Length: 355
Ligand code: TXA
Ligand code: MG
Image (cartoon, rainbow, N blue to C red; front, side, top):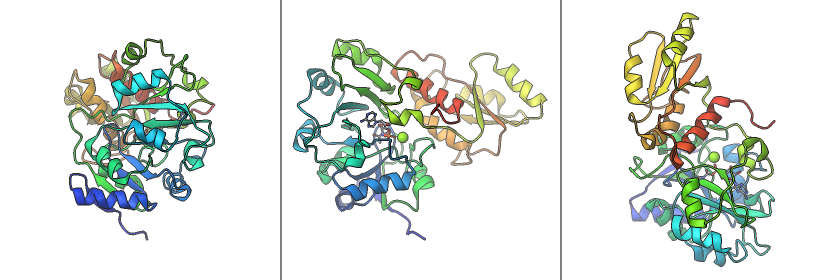
């Protein structure tokens, strides 16, 4: 049996030094970012990068995001040709932060080929979380890091989620403690800038379309999932899905639940704390509260933990249910609201989105 992973304390400088050294030497180390936990590997080293795909059970055609400390690193490792003005403007406004830019891959890039899964582009992010930033600065290499979950499971927002999925498969975890208020709990916004005149949002996140357009002074398109095949390989795979079937319901919650109960079904309710309180004592209903009423931010922060609760994980774990009724937060116009809806729809669609 593999040894338990080392737990590094994210606020201890010596621990960060050890974690950085482990990454440099080719080990897999998970670490917190302001979005979700990443599973880090030395992006310059082919064998550590291949370990990421193995540990996650990730299809090899799904490329990884390269995390760096600064714009200087992008030229230092020759990841891309000189950045187009739109990328520089977005970087100035949103880096460090929850934005990933897909840019043309330079022929001279010092990157393990598997990172980009053979695509002519590379995804790059400069994270803002102080622990991620400290780790990247200390490691002084580009770090390839997908979300630190098993492929197909919800992304991890706590060190515990990472252990649950990857305990026997990684060298260590940097524990970031509880999510901070400004952390978002959903993966970064991914934009495709390979054609700088036709910027595209491949994955919605905390940085919104409006914010991007205001800075870029260009419209961004948002292709349908079904047409993303060649662009964002990751979007075609099953994601975020808990084991039970999930249905999104924003009106007529009572009717839906009563109908299921009448059929003798066990119902799971994923909704904000206020809605859950109303159903807590009803027989046949298992509630998993997710966020405060009226706060899309807190819903986003708790969503992945809530989905995991339906698989029996964590403090909010519930017994088997036949069907999850998920009630989206009510005001979902902004970036994080759109991202929440995107993740909920995917979790509800279930199955393989490949077709
Ligand atoms: O917030 C995040 O982005 C987290 C943290 C750890 O940084 N990372 C993350 O990585 O969510 P991952 O691997 O779970 O999702 C990366 C997404 C996938 O959908 C992948 O297909 C897409 O980015 N991607 C990566 N490189 C790409 C490329 N060259 N072209 C198009 N899409 C790319
Ligand atoms: Mg992921």
